[in-house]
Image (cartoon, one colour):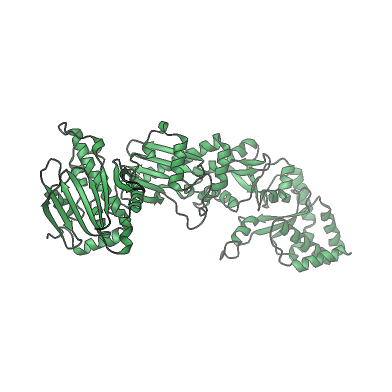
Length: 608
């Protein structure tokens, strides 16, 4: 018996027990090696006219012998000589595929999957013994390489009729490994990891009547086919089969990128969010393939968080894999692909918004919150990428509109006006909104808790500021109205000061911005009333309060009543103040802490 040349028993143990966390990928590695061997022979047949080999002759065969606990994967590829067996299998991390690709003058035309030799040894995760029987193309002799793991291996001459390689695994006796001797399980693993290997993977399958040898992989993936040859039904069927969503997607994006970096991708925009999409359990990512071999079920690096709803696959021959095929080594390639994919998704959404509004509204209903979160979570860094995708409800147009559409419909406005609340209907009843609408002002009615935070981090859109009409700095009055109001507040400053002393508030003042309502509550500073409500709903967020201003409609009869009480009965004025403040808080959806006191005060006034 010969010892492994390059590494120790400890390295083999580490490789088997640590590098691969998922035992089932051993089959992927062996099939990929078989595909490599066929690729090599196919390439030689193209360059050597004397070789009479057709691509249709190539195949990978899988056999199961449950009685002997043997799983055999065979190929009719280039095979190995005795020296190659020792060099490729006797030295850990030695890769014949890598050497072949790097020593060939026309290596850019060779499609080799396996570039690291360690993958073969994943077989020892499930096998107590591995035998490799191989006969090199054009050779008369065949050799058998046998190993039971870390101790070493033997290489002996043997009989084999045709060229190629048989990998024979004696599956471990423990019950957990029995599944690797089950026909159905092996089929599933092939479909999962090696469905798009370009050579047929064949297996003897039993039905009620007989046993037939069938091809169990798809060979050519949908994303590598010509777009014009694929029907909409085929796209949708692939989506439902691949991602277990039986509602048709809103759209698909089929990408074939050529040039410095080449890849194929098929992406889908779902019509609805999955049940766990907005939960911590949701895991984003696209399926990543290298030459048709599944490398990663969900590659998160391929998709930004704000597009995490997108499902799909990416397949590239430019991605080099590390020894486990589970972590990508060439981050530059991955980042380039990710950037391209992001651009394609953005362009497709813009196209949908412009040309298929109804579909975009469905998308927005399902995933609009994620687009907003993409702006807010990046503190506005991603606003240029995402702001054209935003929709808000316009009070004037009475529908969801983009920010560009808002400005186009309100060309003379100096700002983008908005108001926030729990629902569109509730926001419409706010005193400030009614007043703005009466002056033919368009207000964006924002019923999502993130809306105002998004406006805060965006700062501007096309040089227009976002202005909350429920803040105290909205200026839409004429110069005459401003002057009249200034005189009134100065005249009644003692009245307003007394009222302020009765309630916990920054300021009390008369206003002209209300139409029919007697009072409203405005905010001063960066934190609005609506933002206060949102932040207080978050556990352990501390005491975050808006600086509130009680504004009284100077044209409402209540204004004259307050002036009379100030002159005749200031104790009664204090009662009115508390009731008016409670009313303003209720309009804004804020709690009233002293409910009993307020109800008693109301009753006192009613019986007089």
